[in-house]
Image 1 (cartoon, rainbow, N blue to C red):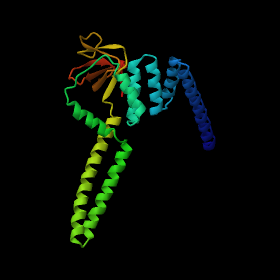
Image 2: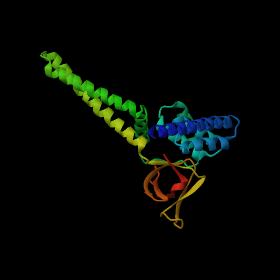
Image 3: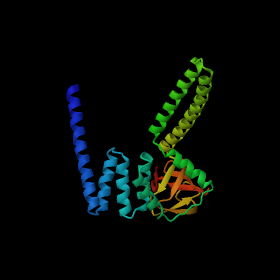
Image 4: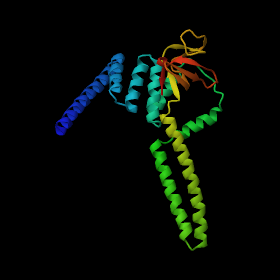
Length: 249
């Protein structure tokens, strides 16, 4: 019975993979023929079927951009960048799309510091940060052992200094790697995916409108309250918006 069940599972898996391959080819043909809505539908089916990759998100973002749905294009570009932060095509297309958004929000935070921090965290993948941490701790341990067992005073001094530098390197790479991991997996940000949404002072349909936002605007998610989320902008403004009107990154 177990063998029969395994065979059935394999057949189902191969069948699904075949359908996925067909959907991918269908999406690519539709995009090349400028049938962007058809391409979008195929890419969305792939994602609903459990397929996730930065290439898939990137292609879907391109399809939405060509179909003049700026908010959803930026949302999928952001998802692609979250998986592959160093991909140049993703960065370029995201920058082009973001430049066309209506809302220009000034930041209260120091832009230079924020930009530098973001660039440092995205300079390597989380896997690379992990390997850098491992290498640093191995170097630290090796140098400290040299310091302990060596009978040469000069060697002891050099190995001690180098081990301290390696230790600092470990602490730095570990901290940056941990921050990069949190930035990758914590849903702290979102993109407005509707043409225009109203931001209210309470999480109810009849609440008073505080201000409006337009598609493509990036927001920080502060609190989730069922069908509503509390958002905060870089300029400090806060308010509630329907969850369905935001794509969570």
